[in-house]
Image 1 (cartoon, rainbow, N blue to C red):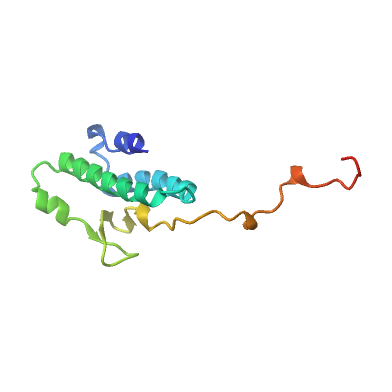
Image 2 (cartoon, rainbow, N blue to C red; image 1 turned 90 degrees about the horizontal axis):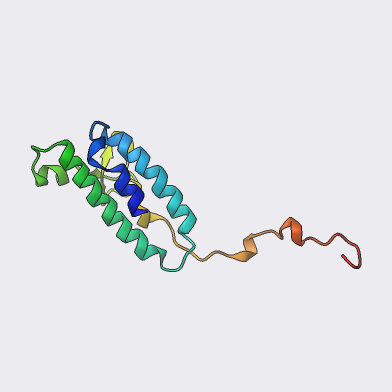
Amino acid sequence: MRHKVKQLTQRDSISVSLGEKLRRVNSITSGWANYYRYCVGAGRVFVALDWYIGLRLYCWLHKKRPKATPSELWGSKQPSRRRATRRVWREGSIEQHVLCWTPVERYRLAWMDTPDFAMSSGEPDA
């Protein structure tokens, strides 16, 4: 996951806007979070990845705007629309997908239907 984020935030992609960069990163992180949210210890991994993604976006913005001071770059984070107390990278209506807001829960087998291959055909020796 870190490798994919690093590939997306390389120096050669500074011509792209922040909104487009967030759209690409969000598509990967949201799918990844929804797939792994049932794993044990996923919450700690999500927090660590949020930190890493934020730092990579900061470094990418620093390369995009080299004359900006660090306080100006960190100051460009805006309050989230989902949680007003949390500041995230945002441009217009596109904001950073925060992994640690994904609910981590245990997968319940009771929700699953019996698979088709496990159904009995009704024959005594089947």
